[in-house]
Length: 233
View (tube, rainbow, N blue to C red):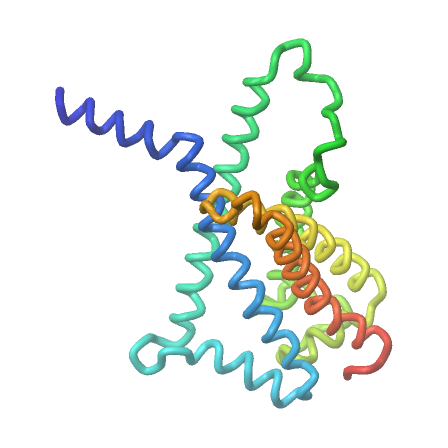
């Protein structure tokens, strides 16, 4: 009986609002770090085809020979997938709890927007757009399952072929703007959850969140627009 009670207490603790917010914050930090590294890798395209293809190849050799070929890449993918699942689950549960906590008469009323930023109001829709884009992005540039502009074995050619098409760049832009808004609110929320949001630091945290979101968004958008306008390729 004691073991059963202890198990229930632990389970309740893991499902608590504090635990779910902390899980969202930690997984959010993991994904932000990945985005920064991924953005840096994308900018390798300005080094030309040989540089970019070599970079893509070296990603699969990380840790070799201690780790099998593509082993480090798969570890990264598993960690990211786990982070996305935990992040999404926590967000859905917290949203459902907040919805149930509102009085019945206010549940279906439009929320006051004076104290809400545009980013915070679009977090859920932004998350859906990002999730759909990630699936498309993997099928296009990772697995080479779909290939607008023409199929290619070279990662560099896949990027150039795809981003020479205006609607591919447009869809990429919409997704990255969603990422930017999501990051702006998410970074601020993560720092708050982890205890960094003191009253005297709020202005600085807003600047940090906005700057980081802007740098990542612009960093990801530079390569596709440079390809589209003929500056790369």
